[in-house]
Image (cartoon, rainbow, N blue to C red; front, side, top):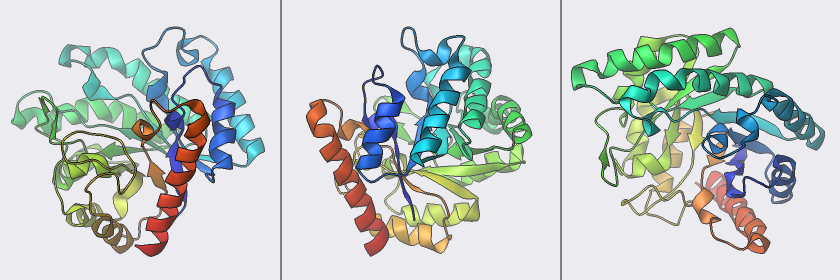
Length: 279
């Protein structure tokens, strides 16, 4: 199983993406998650400027030269917006998919939506996600629906946190739709992740690997929380998971002096190697 990381472990948005690629590569990583959500919501983001496509093409050319691969990406996080904002997010969500195409990404991750009453959850997910799934299919890209935590701080999600929910959404959407399993989100919901992973089967396409202490979505590496990694890896092996072991652990480096970040990223790589070889 190849190791991967989101480059948001190098938290400074002002740092060039090319520099982040070079640093993570020196730490051992060859596969990356292009976390498009990093480029929302801050002033003068390159992603929101008129030349965003040119910028992405230049990053892709650099990645090709460095012989690294962007296997997956993170699309717009729908649940970060109020119900009355959902319709305003569609252009940005579709841009997430277009950006993924430029980066030659195979899977774009989207969170399910859980607004409305329980009887409306599936209908609302279909209405919000189907245009994205259809657009992605036209570009020959898959979208992967991610499990969200049942409870996160004061937020209680009523839908989207079980494998049954994800399978319902996939059936409603059809097409090139798979799943992203977030181990940190799952650890806030269940201690038997293997059971949930087995229900996803070969539709599980990508991972967000993170750990926590069952209280908050800490985005820390394995062994810095209480997730059962033997249980998780057993599930992944039983479904013959073919994607990367992809870290989403930006809080591990947040606040560190820049001189120490590469050491932390190198340790992440070693932890990933240990788990994928020994578990």
